[in-house]
Image (tube, rainbow, N blue to C red):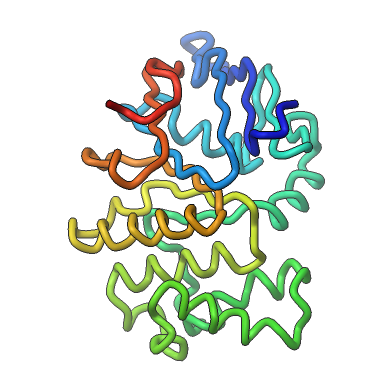
Length: 232
C-alpha cells in the first residue's frame, strides 16, 4: 500500500438483504486519508456516512473491497481480532457522549486504560489528568458527568477516546447535540489534535466545516460524489 496513507478504502461495498431486495449502503467507495488529516464526511441521512465510520472502526465489515489502516488489513479480520485491534488503534467520540453516569470524569477517562491494559496501572491516573488538562476541563475531574455542561461532557468524551493514544479518532456527529458556540470550541479542539498528529474522521451535519478540516468527503446514495479534497 501507499505508506503515505494511514487509511485506504478500495472498492468498498456494503449490502444488506431485506424483504425488498438488496440495499446498497456503500457502493465501490475509494478513499485515502493521510496521517494527521482531519476529514469530514458529509451527506444526507442514509447516504452511508455512519456505515463508513463503522467500517473504519472495525464495528462492521464490507461485503466486498479492502480496508487498510496503516499496514493492517482489517476487512479480513474476525470479530475477536477486530475487537483487539480497535481497542489499541481507534478512539470513538459519540454525539451523546456515552459517559458512564456513576463514574467521575477522571474514572471515565481511565476506564479504557483499565480495560485495554496498554498503559501501566501506575501511570493511568496521571495520564487521565493530563488528557483532561489537554481538553480544558481538568478542574472537573472529580465530578460526575451530570454536573457538567454538554460541551464539557463532550470534551471528557474526547479525552476518553484518547486514553490509549490511538492513531485514529472517529467522531460520529460530535457537535450534533451542542449549541453553535460550543460546537466551534469542539471543532477547534479537533483541529488542534490533528495539528499534533492525530488522524480524525468525523461524520457531521455542520454546514460551515471547511475552515476546520483538511478535507471534505461528500456521500450520496452510498457513493463518494465529490472525491476527497478541500472544498473551494
